[in-house]
Amino acid sequence: MSLPASLRILPRFGLAVLLPTAAALVPLLLPQAVPDAAPQTVWLATGGALALALLIGCVLALDLSDAMTRLVAAADRLAAGTPDTGTPDPRMPDDASALSVRGDEAGGIAAALARVARIQGSLHGTLRRLTHEAGGDAPAAEPLPGRYGEMAALVEDARASFRNIGQQAAQVAVAAGQASTAVSQVADGAAIQTEDLDRVVNAVGRSVRAIADVTDSTRAASDMVRVTAGFADRGKAEMARLVRVSQTIGDNSRRIGRITEAITQIAVKTNILSVNASIEAARAGEQGKGFEVVAEEVGKLADNAVESARQIAEIIEAAAALAEEGKTVTEQARRRMDGLAERVDRIDSAFQSVAVAMEEQQASVREIERSVESVRTVASKNAAASEEIAATMVHLSRLADETRRQVSRFQAG
Image (cartoon, rainbow, N blue to C red; front, side):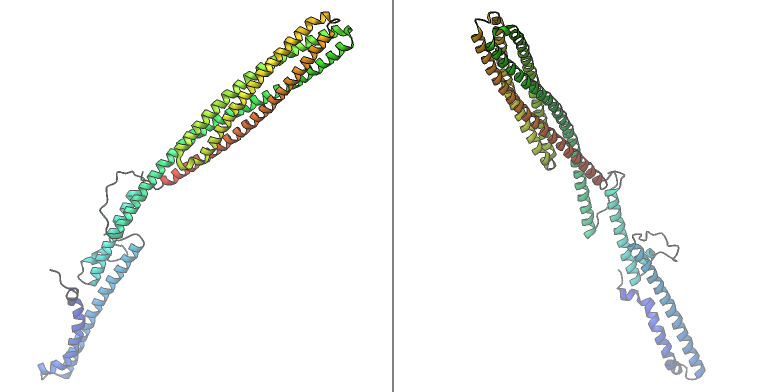
């Protein structure tokens, strides 16, 4: 059974109180105990008792001062994060942990500091286990009391949260990389589409100029036929030229048809790539909503491109039909040039019909030119949107990598 603190410190500090009291009572009690004692003897006994009391008081004071000094040093080491672990301090006669065996208040303070040091060491081990790079095979630490246990639980929860964030960041980085690849393909297709549209515009421009030339030549031939039949040979040459021009128009129409088919295929592929980009954006979650909208707009632009290509194909078919009709009429006119003298009126009517057909074809080709220009504008916007999506995906991938690197600093292993 342990004694109260007041009784445990009585053997030490009681002497410091009783000895001076006893020394003070010597001059009073000694003459009564020894009636014949000399006064000098009394004073010598009194002085000896006082000296002994003073010596014992000094020893007790030094012992208490030494204990307090070591307790202060132990508290300083604990505050600095280097608590006493049982190894003696070379600067001190004994380490502070040895004070816990004392039976006084100094021993109680030393025992309390030792308990705090053990709790601090256990908390440090727990935090080191949670954040050390050695992996997850560290032994489990003993449960911590009070708020220290709450702190350890919070650190464990934070570690689990950072691990989940790191995994999600890795998934976002992978999805962003895949989406970036898909968008790069869209951008390449848009660039090819733009080049094809440039060629279509050039071909349409040449067709417009050729139709204008045919129209002018037809009207000139009609005027010359009405003026004189003597220009029949020249009319034949113009007819032959008209046949070649009509053939060129037909060839250009077929070329435009092939280019339109290529545009349609590119638009379909662009639509597929935009769908893939939308899927990858959906997989990216909240971070992918920004470029999901852009991918949807790319799909709409691709649908518009398909519709414009279909309209171009219809116009080209009509233009080809008109060119074939012009060629047929021109062939008929060339055959009839032999009887130019009696058939001037009929030839003039045929020329007028050809001129009207050429004007209609010219209007149709100009409509084609406007449609192709619209498609080229759509393709340019498509390319710009693809580049914007690619830049966004690269930025998102970099953010995910940076997040993953930051989170890896807080993960175990």
